[in-house]
Structure formats: C-alpha cells, structure tokens
Amino acid sequence: MSYRKQTEQAFKAYLQGKVGVPVYAGTNDTIKAMPCVVVAFVGANQNPPNTGNMDVTLSVSVQSEIDEDGQPNALDVHDELLTAVE
Image 1 (cartoon, rainbow, N blue to C red):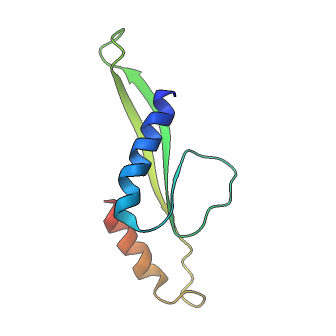
Image 2: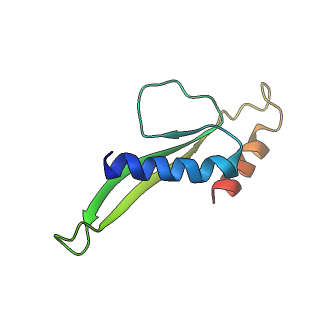
C-alpha cells in the first residue's frame, strides 16, 4: 500500500471514532452522504532527502448541506462537526 493510501486510511480511522458521521479517504466521484468528513492526500516531500522519511500534507474537509428549511439546526450540526474535527 502506498504512503498516500496509508496516510489517508490512518487519518480516516482516527477521525471515524471522533466525529459520528461518515469519513471518506481520498477524492473520487462517489456520491457522499452529507454531512461527512473527507481526508485527502495533497503531497509529500522526503525530509531529509534520500532517507525515506516523508513530510505529508493532507486536506481535511467537512462537507454539509446547510438547509435550515429542509434540515432544522443544520448550521449547528455543521459547527459541532467542525469542532469535533478541530
């Protein structure tokens, strides 16, 4: 398994127990349930060079539908999710 997938899976597993909503690893065209958290690999650099040690950059995003009419308290739920991820 690549370090990209290993890193995404590790952060997905870590967040799943903390946020109470689906957590997805990577980016793809799959329709995601809302609200959710998406953990995606952005890039990596060897540090120091030629050692195999990697500095990895991830993007963690919270995705929600903010529709107070269709889902009462949607903004409060979104804010609680942001706090849980933080």
